[in-house]
Image (cartoon, rainbow, N blue to C red; front, side, top):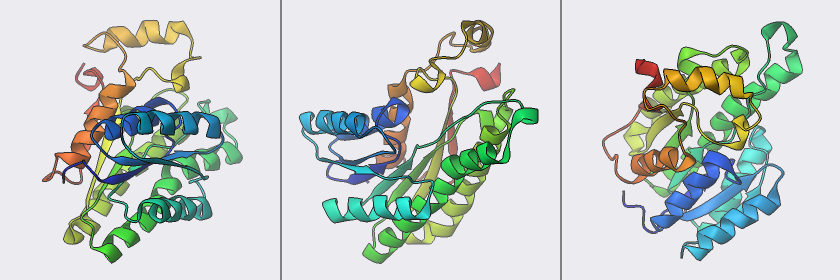
Length: 248
């Protein structure tokens, strides 16, 4: 599937990795549905950057952790572009804390934002792709935390590990329609999510990364674009983008 002229929904794309994905797809000629939960101002700025690159964009404010919000996102994306050829599930939260202080509300909020949201958006996207005969692509942004864990991240790791399993299962389920499903599992990436983490944490982490640095958001985005546009015989895989930390 060539990227030029394709329309892609990117959840959680007002900043960070999601923004980088939206802009990278736009640079290849994709129309982009920019999604945000609260920061509509940031989402509109991303949309302007997409349009300045010569591509098309629409902003849809929707809470994809709910079935209603996910339906709104997919339906408004279809309403604007007519057809949706790809979905990037990037939206999520971390809420790191020790398990003895983890309350039920925090646990549920992480599972809904990081895992249930992917089920909802993928369900509605697949319905559209099958109905329209579109051989589309879904890419789920996971994390190496779902594979190797991290202190204080039990809820986040559980959600991301579940997401990895979801990716494999959905890939098997929809392959008969020509729809591919893959994941990307970043390591540590320079985004707002980790901006307020203590310096001492990174003093310990960076020496464990063979490449001795954090990833830039565009380095994750480029892998997502590859999986959508070029990886035509790749499905059910989660590609690790971590600078080698998992081989250390």
